[in-house]
Length: 565
RNA sequence: UGGGGCGUCGUCAAGCGGUAAGACACAGGAUUUUGAUUCCUGCAUUCGGAGGUUCGAAUCCUCCCGCCCCAGCCA
Image (tube, rainbow, N blue to C red; front, top):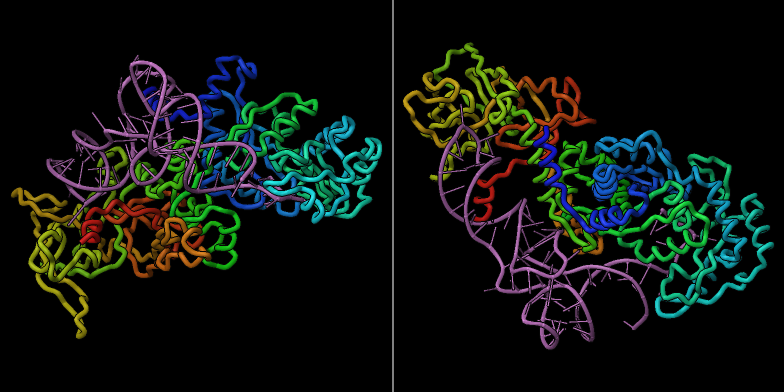
């Protein structure tokens, strides 16, 4: 246990944010406290990019003995929905993080936020503006030209107060007025050109219902929410760098309980997939995939259904590190983290995806024999199970080749192989239909090799997985592969859906799996020996109709060698 | 051509003036009843480029080049 902790600490990578926090701590900043927050907007499903932020924020809180708040940034009822709140909560929980007793909502601060806005107005730092959206855009200026001041900018404070209250009371229609911070229309930073901080939206909110018809904007809400919660380090992605001056301005102008430090880091990008909400939505809505939890999607719900473990994702997020450099990470790295975890923990089992019938000619007709198989060769403590050997067996079609090259360590006419935990068998005859398709193999077995050992020390090159007709049950298997063929699907075509991999899902109907899989647990991942890791599908699988998802393949140097030829 | 960021191995990434960690990938080899796992071994004389400061520079200075973000009453 102690060793584990040491190992974990050693594996915990440093990054520039932790360095800043460590320095703050040694300087006695924030009274030695560290409080972070994960602030999703409940307008979509979480994806693996969010996992990076979750692991960062919760991880730092854990490491520095602080805390991390889960806070919904729910200031735009037009886009948000309770179902997203529910799914986000369940995803964060699944990832294995703890936010304590309270779930925070920016909407819980609406009253306070309103008071802060009034304070700003009273100080002459905010004004009610009647410019239309279009006018506002014109007045804002451009990247290279300064903006123009709104004609309402010098409206008397009393009038601003009155108008703002009437906005709140619902006296005006959407779009007629907004509340703006009074900063600097000439700023080279467009975010400082008198940004809107409140808008009228006569819309019911998932949590505050019809109490409000004005809602605060992100910039106004976020910093103040952070401060109200005593957040010390407010971590966000790079695109908010330009907002930091506004974040700081607001907290300086208002009597806020503290002034959190905003630090930006680069968001995660993965190759062969898309991460933006809009694009994920398009995939779902146009039925390119089967819902938000399609196992090919990088959503938390999707990768979870695919069979990814939270442990693997946490490890991945740790391994990729945190920096300000924009990068595109190889999914291979993710898959590797998964294999790492699964190799340690997945029980081994045998299944044949594309069965080829094998008849053992020197095996008595109705004889059935129970053999012992290990559930994990490197971990005897995981126990053993019984498997059944009989006259009719199935092996993988790929494991037989009629005219096999020398390096093919599998079954071929006249060759002998080991059936894992079974017997050595030798191929005697190949039965075909009139078109030449292989129907069945006639083999013999060596009774002396029970369990797979040859008493005479005879070596055999190949070991095949197999299943017997009596010891197996039918199942369906979904073979998942990467959703896109292009490393960067959004770059290589004007329409990213053109890069969808037509073979991202291959459905196999006639597989046979070891009988023990009849009671396969939900979310338990098994290794189908020599094939990969599989789990029963959360949605499609049932007792009488087994459906497995391929989570990830095993590394396959044989396939790689063949491919490069 | 305004402002803000970023450039260290194929991909991530440490490094913070004392002579380029680590992971994955890749290439060899060993062990193996999974062509898996595991285990060795190799893999940046050089840090986007050019100058400069220094006994010494990926780290400091100057110029240049490349990439990303910002003109929602979205977050």
